[in-house]
Length: 339
Length: 292
Image 1 (cartoon, each protein chain N blue to C red):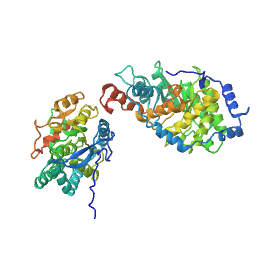
Image 2: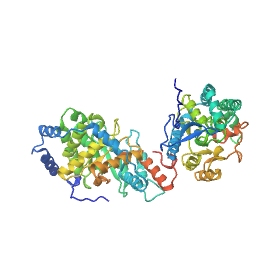
Image 3: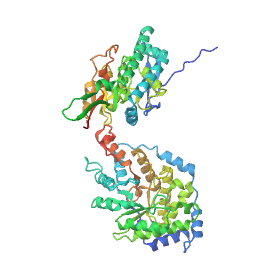
Image 4: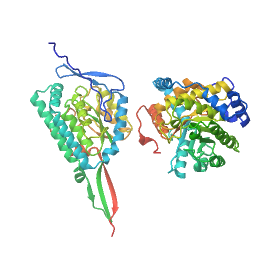
């Protein structure tokens, strides 16, 4: 349904040299150094915080009904990264998660599948085996998730592990400490190093999602800067949160990030994806995000390749809404799985 | 000196322990038996019914998990609060049902007494309805009544307080939570009961009161897949409602259904019965080895 009108570049198709060239072109300096990055990021226009919140509140009032709602619910399902990130995860739990992703609605073959399952690093092998042949991607949270507080060597080894185990997508966290203390070059070079490992995956490049952890970035200006920093360094997706910090994915923050990817596309011709994660539990919330995607970034982002929801309980609520649309009567939690 | 103006009330729903307006924004006029304006009541919609079921479902494990003794004490406390609001209930019942004060007082007293009677059952029903069954083997075999879950209650149309109490109290005392559709034309005692419950120790969501058109709300609850049982007491004499159709809707999800006791609404004067309680419990039986 998305008309790719102009020729856009998918971010994971670029090699390291192209990424560096795109970044150099943007910041106007052949060498990407601390000063040049800082000058560029501080040159970005400030975010109108009141305006962003107002826009979010306004977009949230749109009423999506009947056939549009049915379409939106199916789109939401196909964009879900079905997630389990608990210390208590077992291989059995991961397998049942993948089974749920393979057959979200046993009574309805027309129900789309979630785009991916998202698990901790050590569960990648289990998930990959369970998801074989289904087309469902396996995403791994990596680089000392969720805090990122480990040496670069450890974080890179963590990533290499996940890629070797067959992860299709890597969700990395940025070093928020470095970002907040102004060491943008460290954040930049971390992402570049992780991306290198993702690109070297035998079965084609693993997509790199960069988690900004917006709940720790304090201001919307910082969210905008972190978004641009991640995209300059070669992020394929920018992701709001780990889900372990409150507040997680709010609509205004996601709008700021959607503006960033829209502007990045205009500036470089590269379409980066966005993934809000954490705290999106109801179909109603998810549809508000879809409205924001369409209104802020544009229709070409209404595509599981470029927009994802990181969620665990959202899928069940969407399934209940689908059942309601199909049967006309309200459904209940007895009719979906217990996660 | 000018005359004091009337304070004309617009009541709201009672859902999940708070008082929301109807999602639909609609209200309707409540008039007395002789046609005088009494108040505006919220006209609940199917989405309000859905929200009420969600609130009832959320409250159910906590309420059922409270000890039977505790539930009993909470319900006794409600009776005390009902007594404190006696004058208001008498006025509501007298105006709505067109009774003279003495008759209304008798109805309110009977309602409060009935609430106390049912409250007393909370920690006794298991002794009466449960059993240690004799079995052929070295086992204890114990049956005990467990709450059914979320129960939709179509409250009686004419007896706006005594009838209401007679269908709510037996449902909640065992640990069920209730979504109540009040009498369509006489909703004020139900609204006041909601205000009483909100200031009592009954957790929010245990009783949810919807006012509005019975014909609009009852089918939604009868077909709702997350409702476990439905009491159709008020489905007789409600405009545009055939209780048989509601029973058919409920059958789709194998709900427990309590049919209206008679084809016309009873007076509810003699309707306190343990059977009302047992209509909305399930019997759980466990086997336990005796040892030696």
